[in-house]
Structure formats: C-alpha cells, structure tokens
Image (cartoon, rainbow, N blue to C red; front, side):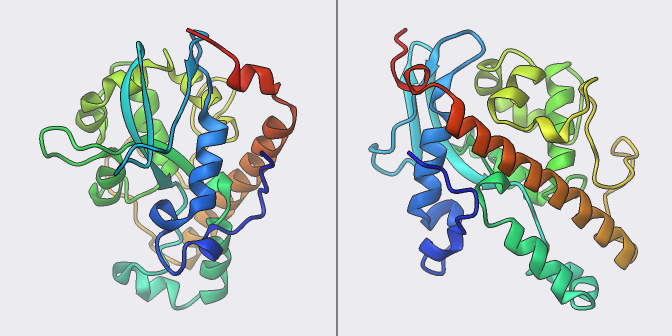
Length: 242
C-alpha cells in the first residue's frame, strides 16, 4: 500500500469526523500499525469485525482500537473563540495540517467499567485540554509508574501499554520520535509546569508558539511515516508468525 502523507482525510469523510468516517484513514492505520512489537511478536490489525474500528486478537490479548487526532487547532472550541477569531488564517492552517496521517494515532476505544476512554479523557481533562505533547508526557510518566492527570485512565488500559514494554518502545512503534528528546524528555509546545496549572492561551502569542511546535512535529512525523512506509520490508510487515 502506498501512504500519501498529503492526503486530506476530510475529503473522504463526507463531512463527518475523519476518525470515524474516513475509509482511507482507517486503511492507513491498519497498514502502518500492523507490524512487529518490541518483543518481536506481530501485531496484526483487522477491520472486518462488526462495530469495531480496528481489532487484534491473539495470544498477546484482545484489543479494540480507534483513531484519535493528536493535533487540535481549537477552531471550533467556543471557549477559545475569543482567541481563534483574531487569527483565523493561523487557526485554519493548523486545522489543515491536522488533516494528514501525521496527525493521527490509535488508542484503545472500548470503555472499561463505563469510564472514559483515553480519547475522551484527553479531551475533558482540563490539565490536558486535548494537547498531545501533554498526553505523551503522561504516557512517559505512566511507564515510570508515576502519577499524572491521565494515570488512572491509562491504568485501565495497562495491557495495551505493556505491548510496547517501555516508553521508548511505544514512541518507536507509533513513530512519535520527533516529539521526544534523546533523553526521552518531551518537546513541549509551550512552557511546562509539571501539571501544576491547566494549560491556557493567555494571548495570541501563546497560540502562535503552540502552533509552531505542533506544525514542526506534524511535518517531521509525516516525513518519518513516509520513509518508514517506503523502506520497511514488506515481509516483516505481513509474514511474521507467533
């Protein structure tokens, strides 16, 4: 399969949410993330189980996964309209950048005990505000066994995170390397205060800095995905047995 990192998933979502409605995004996810895990076992995803976006079942476990956009322009968030209406071009540019494969990942999407999924928790937790740099910091802390605003949510999906063994394994698997320093620290979009206060845009300059960091990451991840898709041996993708 050829991965086109310039394909806009809004174009085949028929006006709906690409995470749910774009057939191409689903196909790209299936292709990109069906591959060996850090332990060498093959993590094959299927899209033929009714009512489930992508599915895996093997001796590794059973997983129902859904797409999640990891870039937020806040274009349609009323609470930030005081800001976004001042810089519509900048907001639309980030919104557009969030329409390509580099702006998406997979998370488990089956509720546990009726509580929030990871996707939902990222959106409603005021210390995260749907920012992926902050989400990735929570994931880093989770692998270290340390508390964060998303710790309890991640704990419900511990079996999923265990697949990747550690933070480095998770980052490498989902090609998130461009948001992480060599010492495994996060490249935050804005100054970070260890979750002491909720992230807020105080002025236009804050948004522009956030946008710059987001765009830099997305552009780099699109390049990384493009290189991986072109050069990763097909036999390693599909011909690995347990």
